[in-house]
Structure formats: structure tokens, C-alpha cells
Length: 505
Image 1 (cartoon, rainbow, N blue to C red):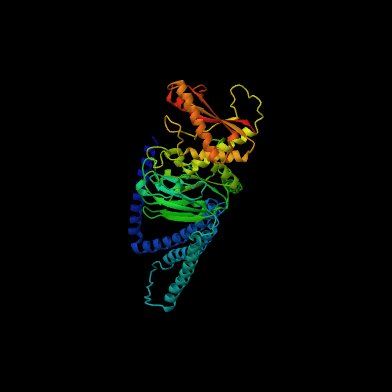
Image 2: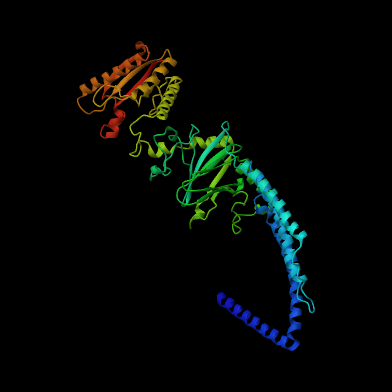
């Protein structure tokens, strides 16, 4: 029904216009075409003047009305150290182009009114005027020179790369259809090497797993940055042209396939500080959903965002990512929760070139875990624990291992035994028992003998590292003290172990 009414209304409007044109034509015949044309010219000239006045007033009023929604005005002052420079450049450009905008529209509409056709008037041919030529050539030249120089200074300031002694956080953003893949450095603070030829389903960025700097890099879902910390973003495209755009920080740089780019900036307002600024304006104290009074206010729902400023495909909109600017403490707390992509998704899989090797970060992790276990054990009172509670005085040496079926230590065992020797030096009065254990596969007597041999080899190795033999006792328990079922491979593997027990401290 609504569509029918709209169609009927349009048809009625067309009929009215046709009737008016017929009446105008009839009126022209009656009054004379020349007189009607002159009257029409006068009316059109006056209408153009009125339109000009209304248009310019509405242009100014609409800009003023919307200023609190525009970048650079109201609450949307730049949230980065360099952003003020760009805002200033835009304001200067707006000042000069605004003057041109107003003057050209005044000239356009006024001249249409002033030089309308009047009976008996005759046009004057004006072939040349040196003064006008100088004015409209010199003034734009001076203004453009000023804008170019100011723009060049702004460019040199904003696009300057880091200095060798700068303290920075360097991250990487790879654009593809249709998302941003973010990469952060781990504790070493350095992003590892990458090679596009290594891109695969489980290695989306083509990281080179032979580069140790890649071992602690992680891939978060959101962009978290500490406030007042200089950030350098490596920007890469994996397929088509994208554009890394952080509007509130005045950051925009194209991501070009095969041509890495970068941007350096320093965020100066946390997300909470920006929200607090927005809360001072009535425009942002309305509900996000006008029909739901329980929905958050606009300022409460605000988040910085990372967008793509290129039309990179039909799902271009989905490249939006949340950006959180937080305090240093909040950033460090978030950082501590992140997990290395290599350790969580690549380590010891078929695609891992280091499969079966013990890596430096693992040696450190094992050392820290062993030290932590000893620190807990040394403060333990020795009072029997509650049923089912772990015995803190007994510590399993998970990485002390032997060749299959024999008592020869594997090459990687030396790392944990070296760590144990250092701990023995740290606690010079401590005495320990080294216990060897096996699963129940094979003859019990042979298993007990093998476990004793392994315990003795472990003791001998510690002695070569400077630990006094009187502080060490080696006992082979064979299969008599399982800690898991012997009915499964996983259980039997747990039962084949070397552990120590603190017998005096």
C-alpha cells in the first residue's frame, strides 16, 4: 500500500509540472516572450542570491553542529604525539581553501545575478587586465608555496624513522583479505626473520624457525600498546593493496605487496582517558541503542580501532580491529599472558626444523622450574602433608634421560644436571638421594639393576661437576614405585624416571 501511494504521488507531481509548463507557455504567448524572459531572469538572479546566502550559512552551521564528531575538533583531539602537527596542517589548509570556497561561491552566484540579461544592455569585451593576472597568479603561488613548505616540514617530522638509541616497541601488521595479522616480539624485544616462501597453513607469516628470535614472537588478536611509548609498526601486505589506518592517532600508511613500509608514532592517551574526554560532551551521553535504555552510553562503548583505508574487497569492513592503549603496568600484565606462536603451534611438529632438539629457551624454562621446585622444597617444614598432596621434598628430574635399554645419559641430560650441580652449590649442606625407576616391562631383577646403574651414572656425573660424593646417595628402585599405570604407553613413560629426594638440608 505504501509503495502504491508513493507511485501515485510521483505521478501526480509529474502531472502538476506538465500543467505548469503548459500554463507558462500560454502565459508567454499572451504577455510576449521577451517580457517573460526578462522577468524570469530577474527572478532567477534573486533566487540564486538567496540560495547562495542560505548555502553558505548552512555550510558553516552544519560544520559547527558536527564538529564534535570530526577528527581534530571537540573531544577528538589527536591521541598521538605527532597528531597535532597534522591537525595544524589540515586547519591551515582549511583556512585558505575556506576563503577560496566562500569567495568563489559569492562570485559565482553574484555574477549570475549582476550580469543577468537586461533589456537594452550590451556586454563589454575585456580582453586583458595585467592587475588581475598578477593578483590571481601571485596570491595562489604564495599560498601554495606556504602550504607546500609547511607540509614538507610536517612530513619530515611525522615520517622520521627511529634513531639508533631510541627505546621503542616494534610490532608487525600484515594485511590480507580480510584481516590484519599482528606479530609482537617476545622477551628479547626483537622480531624474528621471515620469508614469504615459507608461508603455509601453520606458518601464516612465513617466519623462519631456524632464527631463535622467532621463538618468543606471539600473534595477538587485539592491538595493545603502552601509553607514551614510541611504537614502530612494520606494515606488510600479503595479497592486494591495504592501508594501515589508526584514525585517532593520525596514522595511515599503505600496505603494499612486496614493498614493506613502516610508521612510527607515540600514543599519548589511554583508552580510558579518551573515554573520559568523550563523557564531557552531551553527544556521547546517549545510549548506543536508542531503543534499549540498558545499552551502554556512546562514550562507555568507545574503543580505538585499526581499519583498512583501502577498498580491498567486498569484506573490507571486516578488517576492523580493536586497539587498546593502556598503562605500562596493564601492558606488562597483558604481555605476561601471551604465548609464543612457535611454542604453542609449531614446536616439535613435523614442520619444526628443530624437532627433537633442546633449545635455549627450553633450557632456561627447565632451569627456572627446577630452581622454583627447590625453593619450595627448602622452605617446606617436612610435616606430613594432607592425603593426596604432593611431597615437596621429592623432585622429578624430567630432563635427565638415558639411551633406550641402557644407562648412558643422553646429550641433553647434561643441562639439567648442570643446573642441579649449581643448586647443590647454592645449598652446601643439602644431601639428596638420586632414585632410578623403571616401568614393569621385562624382568624385575633386570629392571632393578638397570635403575641402579642409571642412578649411579647420574651421581657420577654430578661428582664430575664438583658435587661432593658424600652428599649424594644413588638408589635403584626398579619397577617397585610406579606413579602411573603400566597399562598404557603414556603411563609407562611416566614410570621410567629419575627423581631426587632431599634427605637433609
